[in-house]
Length: 180
Image 1 (cartoon, rainbow, N blue to C red):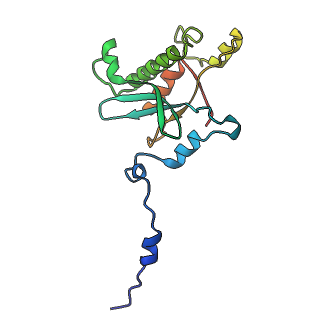
Image 2 (spheres, helix red, strand yellow; image 1 turned 180 degrees about the vertical axis):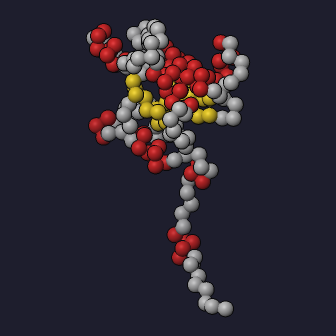
Image 3 (cartoon, rainbow, N blue to C red; image 1 turned 60 degrees about the vertical axis):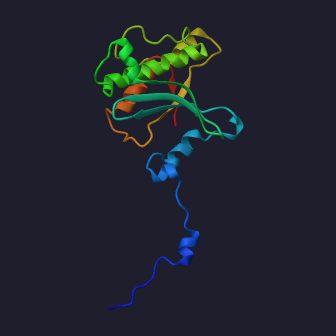
C-alpha cells in the first residue's frame, strides 16, 4: 500500500472558519444581500427599502423591509391568507394570488405614508406600461414615489416566476423600481 498524504492537518483546523448559520442552512445569500443594502457614504442613515417576497408551502409572503445595524425592520407586510377575506378560497400560491398580495402590500404602504391619495394607480387595465414618475412630474408635488428593490432571496430568476407577479402587483399601485 502506498503512502497517503494527510491534507487536513492541525494548521487547517486552526484556521477553519465556519460559515454563518443562515448560509449553512441555505437560507441567505450574504453576497447578494450586502449589495442590496449597501448605501452610499453621502446618504448615511437613509434606509434602502426592499420588497421581500417569499413562498412557503401554502402561501405567499410580501414585506417592505429596510436594514439597520440591529437587524431588519419590517414596515408593512401581507400574505395570501388575507385574500380569503376578499373571496379567494383556493390557490393561495398561484400567480394571481401573488399579484393580489403585491397589490395588498402596496396599498398598505401607501396608506401608512400618506401617499394613497397622490398615487392612486391605474384606473383601468389596458396592458400598457404605467409610469408613476411621470405622474409625479405632472402634479409638481414635493413627495416623490416610493422606491424599492426587489429581494427574491434564493429563488431562481426565471421568466414567469411568481416573485415577479408580486412585483407587478406592487408596481401597479405604488412605486417605482430602483435599479439595483
